[in-house]
Amino acid sequence: MAARPSLPQPKRRTQKPPDAADPSATRVRRAPRVRRVPEVERCPHAPRRAIAPARVAQTQTGGRTWQLGRWEECSSDCGTGLEARSVTCSGPRGESDCTEAAPNSSRSCFSNSNCAWQMQPWGPCNVSCGIGWQERMIQCPTGNDVDCPTKPSTWQRCYTQEGCQWLAGPWSGCSGTCEPGTRARNLTCSSHEETDCAQVQRPLDQESCNLDATGCQWTLGSWSSCSASTCGALGTRVRSVECPSRSGDSGCPVPKPRSLEPCLSEQTCEWQLLSEWSDCDASCGWGWSTRVVQCSAGADEDCPGEKPESEKACYSTSGCQWWTGQWSACNATCGLGLETRQVLCGSESCDPGTAPASERSCHSNAQCEWQIGDWGACSTSCGSGHASRAVQCPSTDADCAWAPRPLDRRSCRNITGCAWSISSWSVCSQSCGDGTRTRSAVCPSGEDTDCITTAGERPSLLESCREELGCAWSIGDWSSCSSACGAGRRQRVVACGAVGACNASTRPVDSEACVGESCGWSLGSWSSCSQSCGEGVQERSVQCIDPEGCGTAPPTQQVCFTTESCQWQLGPWSNCSDGCGIGWRSRDIRCGDAGLVAEHCPAP
Image 1 (tube, helix red, strand yellow):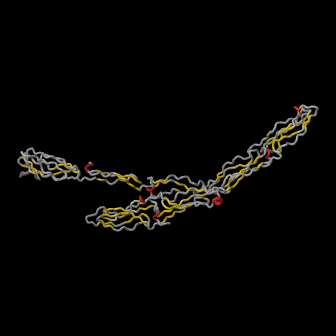
Image 2 (tube, one colour):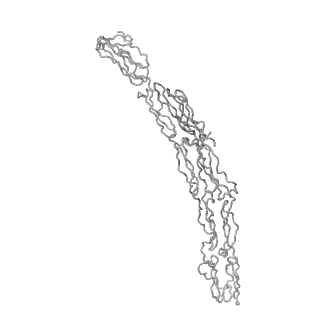
Image 3 (cartoon, one colour):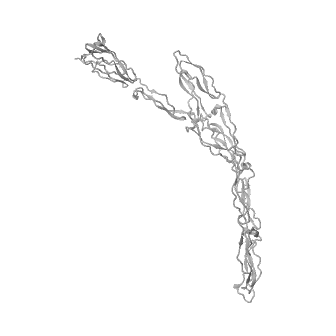
């Protein structure tokens, strides 16, 4: 029996399985992206004879033949579908002439020849300020990713400024405790990148404070101990007198309280026994015994109570053989000395060991005077201070107490070391562009004339400044595409807060290609911008002129930006930073009502 030929192979990318007329045919799968579900049948009663290649296969049953057409293409080009073919009986009465069951006229098939990814719109950015990321859903219609080409990314970086805001730290303490001053605070952008907050109005980071202060009062220290150490003596005592004002002593009311005053010694006066009782001045008979008794203040009336006895009567017989003369005057004019007397033997022989004393101690203040040194240098080189000198008695202060003790300290004023005390410059009034900054300059003495005399005129308290740390590119919204239908371009405003302050290499593009999708729409011209300074709105008419209908309507409004009428807006001046003397004040200067960048307003 001759071999049974196979049916001719279809000229398609996907090889179909062989039909039931050729049970010996081999299934071939050439294209990996197309998969067929085979349905192969054998007709058991068909004679084994060769079937010539033809477009219609036949199978015999009961003398009648089923005629099978070629399988059609799969009904789906991505996923599972159906293939169909014609199945007819060759008998004149149709299918009733064929006794065997009819072969299948359809079968399942699978193809991925035209599979494409189904992508959902991008989700929202995961941050409201700065750089973040956003996701989207992507799936292959077959449910199997290998049936679709290379998978696009499911996430991408995103950037937004919609939720950007300045975060302000707590205010510092006021620089003036008893007068108007300033206070400052730190400002940070919510994304920690200041450029992200370039479109947000920046709050003040420095302001005046303590404006209701009524003025500074003197701060007085405690009095020191009196400089006189002897009871009843006159000395001086001192205390600190300071003004808490930043302007020094000139910031407090006049007159200035005293920092030095005279005082009496805090020591209690008492009687002093400067010597023991002397021997009886008579060695034979009645005489006198004495001792030195003195008030520690030098004057007896300064000591309390009755003065102790300084002499008393005595009687001696031990030296009746000795004759004594009168005591001489004290040989000291200030302090301790000696008194002498003549002692003679009144008999033929006298025992020298029994001779009365020929001298004794004595004390005198007849010529005691205070010894005064030269005044020393002033205790300060700029302003009010004090000078000291040595004041002492040659013996003890009590011996000189008969005369008032001269002052050992006095007030003085010196300006030889006066120089302006200059603070650091404040931050620039503008975070981006030209502004001003201030500083204070005070004389430590509290009197500006002292520093003018020694150091010249007060330094400048105000100067121009330029700040670029807060400068960033300001980006406007994209305009509509210049072409309503087809290729065109769109623009947006890209500006820097100060001319030349932003990095040109990071400047965002202000123009890009676009494709208008509003074919079939009649578009009117854009109206003038609703604002003459800053961001506004433009409008236009939009009408569909395509009889078969139009797609999504193009926008009838768009954001616009103009600086034609921009002018500087000046705020009120603040209070002076100094309640007394020369200070500084500031005011808010903005470009336009919306606070635009400086380059949008004319040069001042």
